[in-house]
Amino acid sequence: MKKILLILLCFPLLVFSQDEKRLALVIGNANYDKGELKNPVNDALLIAKTLDSLDFDVILDTNIADKRSFKNTIRKFGDKRQDYDVAFIYYAGHGIQVSGENYLLPTKETFASEYDVQDFGISVQDIMRYLTGMTNQVNILILDACRDNPFEKNWNNTRSLKGDGLAKIPPPTGSLIAFSTDAGNTAADGDSKNSVYCESLCKNMVLENTALDQVFRNVRTDVLNKTNGNQRPMEASQLTGNAFYLNPINFNFYIDKINTLILSDKNSEALEISNNLIVLFPKKSIGYAKRGHVNFLLTNYKLAEEDYIKAIELNPKEYEAYFYYIRKDNEDDLIDLGLTDITELYTEKGISGVVVLIDKLIENDPKDTEARIQLARLKSDVGQYKDAINELKYILYNFDQETLNHYQKKHYLFGNNRSESTLGAIHIQLSYVYSYNKQYEEALFHCKESLKHTLHHNPANPDRGYIYFNQGEIYYELEEYDKALEQYNLSIEVVDFDPSFFYSRSACYRKMGNYSAAEIDHSKSIKVSEMNGDEVEIAYYSFLRGNFYYKFTEDMLKALNDVNYAILKFNELNNESKNRPAIYITRGKIYNKLGNNELMCEDYKKACELGDCEMFNTHCK
Image: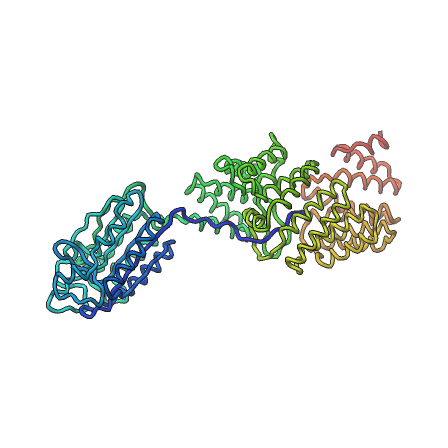
């Protein structure tokens, strides 16, 4: 059966991101007047792209000409460093040591002596000062700059020169310093677009769930193999705390994958991914909530309940465990998930127990408007109409559109891009509650308000069909059948796939004495159910048409045929519908009209076994 629910804006599911903030400084110098290099700019670009994929905010600079420009770039990094948890610095270009101190060289300064290097080069200490003191954070400095010093007679275009390379640098606490080759040696610039060291580093940095020290061990192995042992990368580490991962297991990937599989009806695969997620992240409440959804869709209701309860134990604010809705592509029904849809299994507390849980959710976050909407819906389900109305009006008059949109998007996963009016949805929900409480004038007012907001937001929105339908239901209760028929007609023009719309219009035709039109709509309700492929609906609307034939025509054979079909189908499907006693009673009445009291009493007895003994006790004892 169609569920009349809140229809809100379509947003993608919440995206999870790493808690830590990451900053990188990447420099590549190549166009030296003497000793021009081939790869450093390409290396810097590749490193920057790789770090960007690992959620680093990257400051990139290449071919820095002079000392002031070089220092300005470093300072730009230093000014931001304190706002980040992880710092990563990569330099490719010429670097030399003078008197045991390492210098990085701008490309257009003149270095005629060691004093020129000290005056116009950039001391690595100018970078280190932004790392010292960050002992409880992660700092990574990579010097792919083990070139020979420029005082050699002739510079050439290779990194493999005869100088002394760079000097060792003791890393401060919380830092790791890496060299593309061992201290005192030089590294090849390479024959391809990128250096051997850079290619290996980028390949290994993106490996999922690989600790940082393992990344550099992998790089050392690669480079040794590719250079026949001539280049040996080295690192010195004073990192503290737990192992650090540049690319930890992608929690967000698992969540997105589960969502995609759910929307594609691949629930068995989604269950496998959910199990993996829980193994990898046993303390993450969302993992249990997701598995709860999958178990629910697989009709493993008890397991779903256990998962939802575990999620709430881990995190009382895990909204997905309370209620969550899905709309799939090309489908107009919302699927209800979460504890609110398996309350029959919540035997100790029932609906009232779920109300208590949602009360706690609201207590944790008073602005959670979706929790308040769901609370109103539950209170309406248990007949607490006044409380439901008060809750919905509180939302309507206390929260602006931005707040409504912010909270509603947490509770929905959509496979399409439809967009509905949040205010329109709240008004229609109010109209339902007022209708249940027989306050029809108020219900009509909120229908019209809902229609106004919905049409303003999206005039083509098919959900306006449900507003027309609800107005038809209200006018029907008010016995204004002409108005009711007008609204039913509008609803069917917009939504022609809901059999309940045709059935309600058939009831209106009956009240107006138009039995031929009523019969046509009864048949349409069955046809729509057949098109929807819902066998339970087909049986149910067949019973209703049979009941119509019994009450309003003389054709008892048609009546008997429809009711027999309904009984056979419900039995075949092992369906425990609450309508089953009524179906047997209707067939008993048909047998009575046909003069077969024995079969009549058999059906009344069957209805009694199913819980309704009135007809049996009156006519068959």
